[in-house]
Length: 396
Ligand SMILES: Cc1cc2nc3c(=O)[nH]c(=O)nc-3n(C[C@H](O)[C@H](O)[C@H](O)COP(=O)(O)OP(=O)(O)OC[C@H]3O[C@@H](n4cnc5c(N)ncnc54)[C@H](O)[C@@H]3O)c2cc1C
Image 1 (cartoon, rainbow, N blue to C red):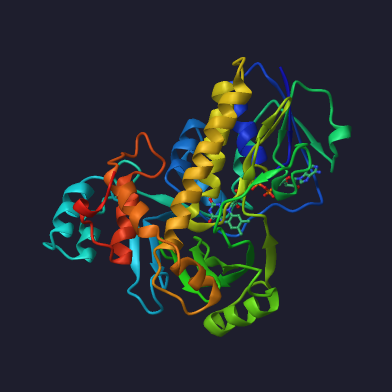
Image 2 (tube, protein in one colour):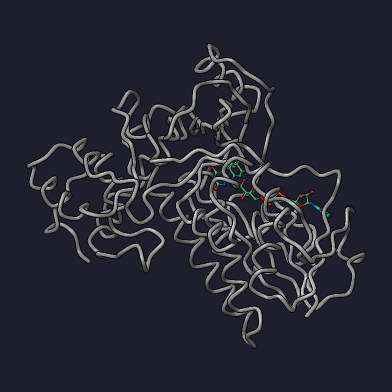
């Protein structure tokens, strides 16, 4: 089988590395533009990044250094419930959480005592902050025996192949039907991002702002990927920059702002005939909860599993869409449980009822081995939003 991978960012090279390892007989050509830059904002990740590199046989000490990586224990949120609410660290806690949550629901322990359960040695006990603009380079070094072409191509110029993998990012230059499925109430569609110099932290930070939220992702070389993601129908880029600087002007900036825009959602059909989208070309909801690279890894592994199956297109589309929709649902709950109504952005969400479905998600008792977002992850949100876990009030 001959495969073209078009795009050389994280999606292109991670896909090339994984397919090379798992399908040694496939002929792979990777075509990347020397002119179109990759996305790399300072990415906060989920724990599956570690397992992915293990599968590629690239040792942690090698890859973590190559992309200024830092082990991440959690994500601290504030200002999503109300302005000035108490920062709460959403840590990677698995063992003991359910028992603790029962006690918490009975009022026997306070919400901060959950931190005592944190164990970095637990299964999936940590993830990473990485620079995605660098995270593909080590995979490129380890990936041998592929043809590499530097060129900006259109679909008509592609070398003959059985399958084209569109890794061209938000531009989606290869996939033909670009019809998107969008999620109701997903408003964030723009990011202004810049780099700051500050000491490293092992947790990322997300701070609710007037029309979205600020993020800080700390890298090992004292660079911080930081910026403001917001709803561009309510706030101009210039006003976003002003608001950002009002809140962060005291910090030491290394770069000017870069602006990134996307249509929140996913392709209706990620695999179409002999072309499959992987990475940002499939879509992007928004950066909340570090989902981008996690979705990418899911897509790469799914593609690899189904590559030789007769109904590969159908399985891939079903699996990719399911996980994307779960991500969008989880993100929706981050806004739809708010008590804020201080701007038109938050008022929109304050009028939604996220609490009822949040409690349903918790009480469905799902576990992490079978679900992208198990019950306890939703329980964490309920704790942050001060939503009592009163089982009697909720229909399953
Ligand atoms: C604002 C923002 C914040 C994010 N935050 C996070 C986060 O915190 N955590 C997380 O996990 N993920 C995050 N992501 C997602 C993450 O950055 C991406 O999933 C990841 O970088 C992969 O991007 P990509 O390789 O699909 O696309 P890109 O990085 O855009 O790469 C596209 C590649 O295609 C090439 N190309 C484009 N057109 C052509 C052409 N015509 N011919 C040849 N080559 C071409 C380009 O040169 C480039 O090599 C974020 C994304 C955005 C936009």
